[in-house]
Image (cartoon, rainbow over all chains, first blue to last red; front, side, top):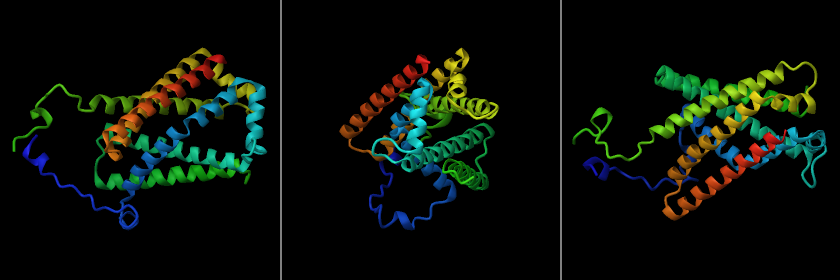
Length: 143
Length: 121
């Protein structure tokens, strides 16, 4: 182990409840942590995603059952809740997708300036939240 | 202190994470392409999309093969990502091992189910 690695300072006095809300995370940092959270969300809900996929392609009966689950609910789960969960998944996918493209662009074009980090983060958030709002409005029948 | 990175780094035979880093980008690119191809098929389908139209998209052999490779890509992509999360936040080795095993079982199970649903079509 090198001299520097051994003396690396450790900070263990960060309190999640007291310090994190005041922490001024730059907008690129917000995109970064949301990339992680959206990935974790899709990992946790993966069986639900596959259940949706399975029912949607297996047969006309399962397809109709799936449509009904979103319109009138399934068992004790109301339809609006199904839509809400689907909306969370739509946001997670869109954010992860756009933030991922941002990563790929940065890697390929060596776009690593502070300014690009900030402007592309704003574009990522605007697009992902905007598209989620549009699709959500469609799903809940607002237009 | 002597430089131990870049071309001067002392190679010990251990992994440096480059392979996983690259794999995450390659699998991510494939999944992004799949997303665009799937969206294009949905958008360019005339009329409302019912069961016939939706299942029809996945029925062709090339789409099945593509979807299959996307499922495998997803498996590896999520494994790298979840392992990163556990490595960053979970310090006790025992807990981390349990979570790693859980992640692997969860992902392999999900991938199996997805492939089964796909190939039943």
